[in-house]
Length: 134
Ligand code: CO
Image 1: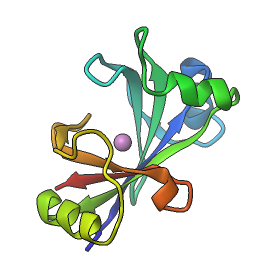
Image 2: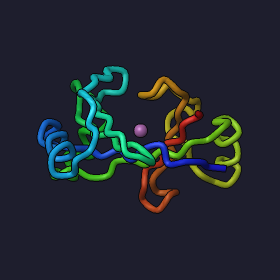
Image 3: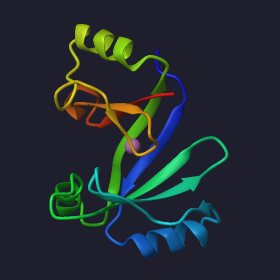
Image 4: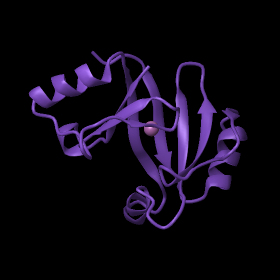
């Protein structure tokens, strides 16, 4: 059911330092910071030949990644995002298999303007999973 790995999101405590490291030491194609007020994050997209990395930094007072950074002050992998063709069908299949969908279970428009859902990390080997309809 899942398709390509769309992105790996990494929460970082210092966005400028992380961007400089990816551009310099790792030699990656690093985009400009983008504020996503609806999601409480500032994001930098890094294009790799086969997928993307998203550097996430808290934006505003109630950022959903602040708690993660409090627990992981050096940063860390926050979630992975898999592509699906039909997010409602994917959600219903996952719920029927016992997985928990976060929030009210209805897809929201994600950082790329496409419908997304998040799955409970305790149901997926401790990893927060995002599904994005492509
Ligand atoms: Co994401």
